[in-house]
Length: 281
Image (cartoon, rainbow, N blue to C red; front, top):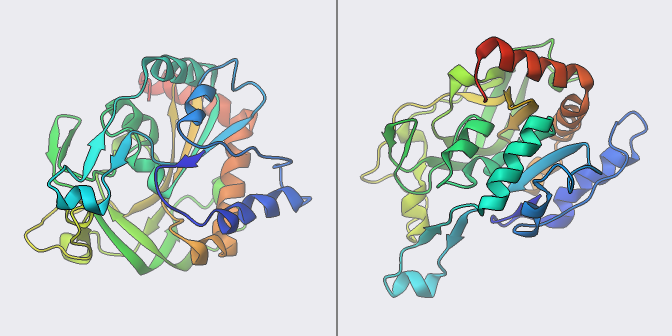
């Protein structure tokens, strides 16, 4: 599922073409659908033909163009999800559909806090409240050289991944609900304000600056798993552009995450995790 954030389509979908071509991959076919049409599939009946949902979208956010910003219109408008989509999502999660979220998908539906709980965190384009805490707008930084450490080497998502690897990618400074997730990957980057730029300033035409902006020190978690309802859920923060798409490690992480989210053992894990924690997500 895509749309809401620009990306290089052909190069992104090569990842999935390669997974389909790989005889060792569990991905035999995939279907691409854009927002808002994607909302139709958050329904147990409509979703039945697919095993796993992979979100690389950013719904619920509408950006003003440069001319509109110049005329004084707010740079961004946030929209509530349709009630049908809310109800359908809950039903789908009760059913246990596997979910994989990538990169900017963590910014989706900013007015629907329940969605942030499904993913395990949220990127804010403007100051917002999450779990009763007031946050400034989130931070971003492109082309960050990061060393990534695997913190759960036994997890299937990191099968075939080195215990530590380097990646050049965009990093986010945002609130992560560490108490709700099981960590898989951590970055050695320093997640402090001076190493990031303000998202709000960027959408106001002042990109790549943190002047007058500060954010609490953030989590260095860049990959995790959790449950939502009875669904196994994974989030991988990587994936800003073509150079990242071409990284074999990134493709393997996505393939592993899809395999994990489709595995019956993962569904049983999600059901047991829900029962043990007593939490919906």
